[in-house]
Length: 348
Ligand code: MRU
Image (cartoon, rainbow, N blue to C red; front, side, top):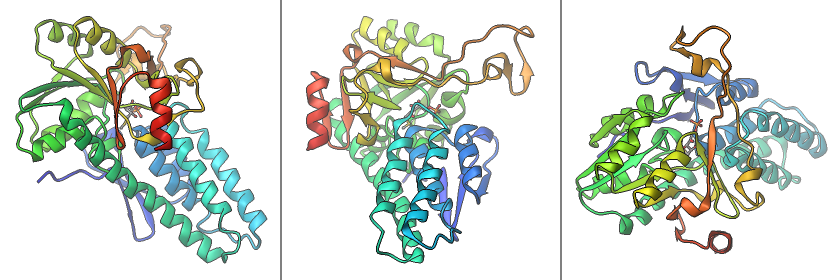
């Protein structure tokens, strides 16, 4: 049995966040008592990964009204909407943030006839429910992958779409955990994922802890590995899938898709339906977060590039839908034509 590391905990009416900035050296949970602390934990990437950002924002929405004293529904909703607007500014790309916040606002709006205490209780319940649902969604994603994989498979993954990015199991890693349960042999290559090093610090850490055979490579080694015939499939996660299937994921994902296409290797995107955004028509409309140049020019606080050098640091890229072999969701496998089939999936 795999002992999963829990990236967030709700206990004793408090939110505890595992500080992923300190992994793998230090396992440190910090409690977040205010909505501002939750905002900064998301923005500064103390936690990260699309589903986990959504779950944390849902708890943030509860924390934001926990001590409210609003005496009528209108002023309660004003506070809820103000909090929602604030949390929406934390990170722009992963649609799960907006999905979870909208869900909490909608739930709050339904509670007009409840007392203030009941409203608070029911909003906490909704956040807990979002977290629970994510766990079962990811398990289903893993199970739905099985017909696409086999005993002995060699998988390349990018970033951390792992248990540390979700309530449990991860999305891209869910099939790895399910395959392990089945007793399958498997080899995973994890891209280190510059500049934040989600692959080196997080994916290789969580898979190694789970006793899954994982080999860490630098991002620029993937093409050579594929040319040597060492990769059977690529599996990545997603921060937002547009209506036509264009997919935002960690910077470097698109290069992998181009390589996989060249070497005729299946390129799969593991995606929970809350990451599918039919309101965004194509990848061009997905906002791409740019992060601090310091992430590129320094290494653990040590400057490695010339002082004052120009830096471009987009945190995500867009993989064109034509390079994606299939999406694997909790509701099943989605094949092209994505424009039609993603829509069909969401009304299922
Ligand atoms: O910047 P991050 O670490 O939040 O980016 C994470 C990713 O790109 C993941 O692949 C994606 O969110 C899916 S997590 C299941």
